[in-house]
Length: 348
Image 1 (spheres, rainbow, N blue to C red):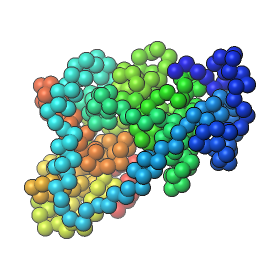
Image 2 (image 1 turned 135 degrees about the horizontal axis):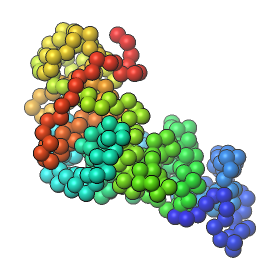
Image 3 (image 1 turned 90 degrees about the horizontal axis):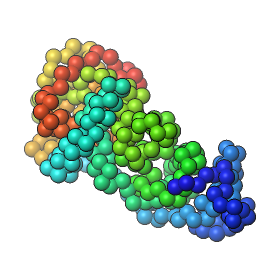
């Protein structure tokens, strides 16, 4: 991964590629030609862009996967129990503990710098890639190009990500045809999208590169991402709520909800910690096999959902983090419950 868009890598390559895209899956596509022109305007070499796009392969499987619409269940199915069971296993805990031990100094340094406890950094990297054990199998350039040019519903978003990816390749000096990642173009141990690399990735090991495949840089980048999205050091993430047995399944729940504690109590739920009536929280429902579990989400829970916009994902990160912390004999964290609302929470 040593090529650059701003200079042809070998003198013998000069003139090897035409000024227009004439071969490959995207040859003759006006939208791709326009995109190449836009990237040329940003300083990238046209012949190098043509070289890359002549080798890009459209991936129909990605389109089919994106078109599979998830529909929420109309009633309880035990989905949370199955979801958690796939992600928090004896093998996962063993691997997570080993990763923590191997990178303890880096994790502690990130925690001091950004205020994010090591267990949450470890849990994110574990859920995303099994601590580097599986980082995806799709060529990133193929995934991003397929979604940018053949998935109209989100074409604008993925063209922006493709742009960031090509600029990233130029900045970091690697061949964009080489890296592999997720079907959506996420990369490295923490599965950052290219725009997240641009905005939040950091050079935590001081070697002059922001390398998402390097554990030290990945740890620092995840911590920086959390801080940039409003992580509150020492603050609580969630609290359990008892009751709610007669609560209709149609009740609005999830990390986007915004209730006062007074309203929570009116619904027959009792927080496990003392909270003032005007405290704002999200109401979380986990569809457990033994019946629904209700939790209250605080600001730091919302921050976790900025990484992946799923209540189940964020709760799994939290529970994996706490289990790993306990395995290391660190005991229960001393967390305060803050009174500030989420920065972008709706009023009401």
